[in-house]
Image 1 (cartoon, rainbow, N blue to C red):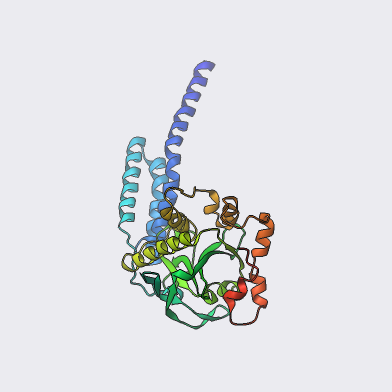
Image 2: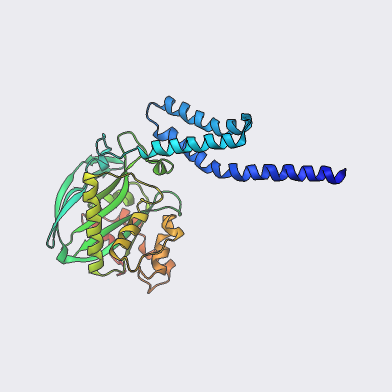
Length: 339
């Protein structure tokens, strides 16, 4: 009798364990679906909240109240399929009332070695406020391209940093490009929204006196600059790859993706596009971007004549730039930059 009771109990354990093994994989897409509906479903906030709550309640209700497990599974699969079909109908656009710092789309034309960039941002700030709003057309001579610099800006923890590339020209010009979210008026950045098609993708070409000084002097972020160990030819190829993407966004907008199309992983995509025979491997530090300089150091893409800790210490510029005076901001920040 005891053996029979034990056997029945074991069967129940196996039965519920089997069901749990089927249901548990649904939890992640279920949670994603709740967030997707809450943030991306059309209509006012209360409508999105009601739709998200109904979806959130469906999965537990189906398996708690439903009598047929297989039928409930079928309903859940069909519901997820409908959700994915709706998700694919969402399209990015260039027709919104954009926040002023991403109001224009940077793009350019390349004729021989002459690059003309349109909508190069050159704002002036007073604290967090914009004093002068300027979008400029600038010319660059690619024959004078002499280097490529990487900026890392930390606004919160040491884990996540914003990355900016800046092309250095011997005639004193610099072209900084920041891959960002293109927010509309009233939108704030949210890491969660970055996964949910809530922002268009923006490549902001800017003067360093704008895009870097904003972070060092006004936002008081921790900023590091490194000279990348790449040839002039590689720097130019990377710039041309950026230019193609920027021109493409003028005609066909894309969504920002916090996982695969952010400020750092996009650089990887461009880099691998210009060197398909030598792809840069995926690494966790490409996603926890605050450590990307460590990865580049290990790969020999930064100056390795110093230990990494010492190189990093010498590469920090924000405190020094806050105390510097004078107008040649780009020249001052590169003082003592290790080539």
